[in-house]
Amino acid sequence: MRHLRVLGLALLALFAVGAVASASASAALPQVLVGGVASAATFKGTSEPVPKLETLKGTFVECEKSASTTEIGANGESGTFHVTFSGKCHAVRSGVSAECTGLGDTTKGTILALGTVKFVYDKLGTELGVAAHLTLEPVHFECEAFGVKELVKVSGDLLCLITPINTLTAKSAILCKQTKGDSTELKYWETSEGTEKITSLLTATAEGTAESSGQETHENLVSFVGGVEKAVTLDG
Image (cartoon, rainbow, N blue to C red; front, side, top):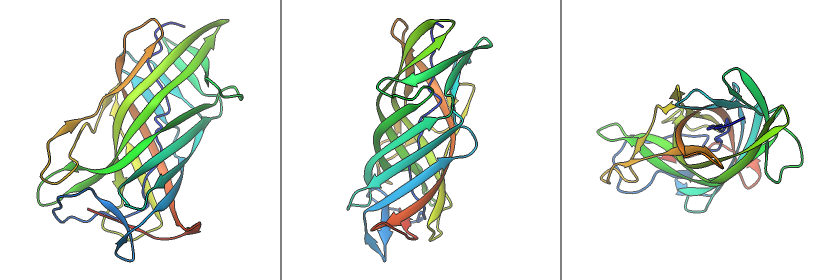
């Protein structure tokens, strides 16, 4: 199957914060706070519904389920994530389905994505919006249909909104949205007075050129501090 341009994973992501975003202006990145102090935290997530990444040409990859873990460092601003997509991961193009498996994964239909994450602003003004900026390590997986295999690479970054905001909670969600391969959220700022930046998520086969893609994922998250489930605040 040629020119698969999609990774129904992103991951997606797959990480994030069970938390709260302040609406006050800030010259720094949003932070995870525990008792008013920047803190390390772990977020564990599961997708609902099925995550989907779609290319501009309509090819998409879906997996039945995902499980993610995000580790935020002591500065409360950034960290790392990994997400495992499993349950018959497959790509679909022109009505033809191909089973996809990550390189190095021993279970068919499973794909692992790794990367880094930091909290940023998705809008400016009197009400600042907080989002998760996810940067992928290049993800390689192979899709097979009718005995023909094709290698696919996904790279780049994406922006996903966090909800709820302004609420102290141990449970939250991260939302990545797209329409026919176009990401809904593209612009972000690292400070309330910073320069506008743009994300770019790309997929390509070994023989094809990279193509823009959009990720659609809803991850339900639970936050932990010191191994114990605990409500935290994401303060902007």
